[in-house]
Amino acid sequence: MRQTCWIILVLAAALTLGGCNGAVATSRDGRGIVGESAWFSSAKLLEGTQSTAVTLGGKTVRVEASQVTWGEGRSLALPSQWRHLQLSESSGSILVTVDGTALARIYPKA
Image 1 (tube, rainbow, N blue to C red):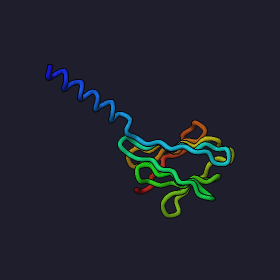
Image 2 (cartoon, helix red, strand yellow):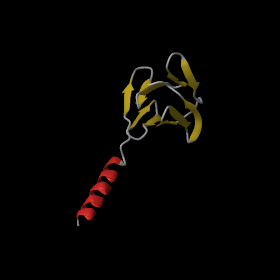
Image 3 (cartoon, rainbow, N blue to C red):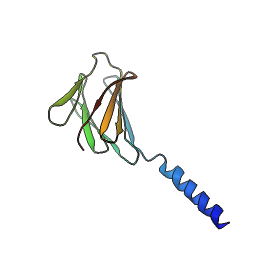
Image 4 (cartoon, helix red, strand yellow):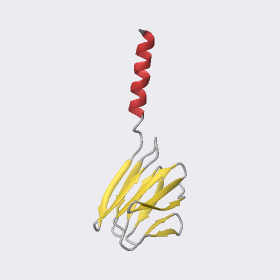
């Protein structure tokens, strides 16, 4: 009986911790922006007048209509007619996916 209770407790904890990642989403000028953090990491979103700041696991990037920027002067050009941008954090990088196609993996610092 004691072993059964222990197994149930471990399974309940695993299920509770299984979804411990963050996600944010917004729309800007008719374009969707989604950010997903890695496990045990947070996601934050702050909309400004010219860009949307997405912070995933402490790494912040800014999304503008024509580019994604991060750090000191780093940038990634976006296709002119993009409709959906997804930022997916994993360990030390963020995968930038545009309209379902992986565009680049960037390495902003936390």
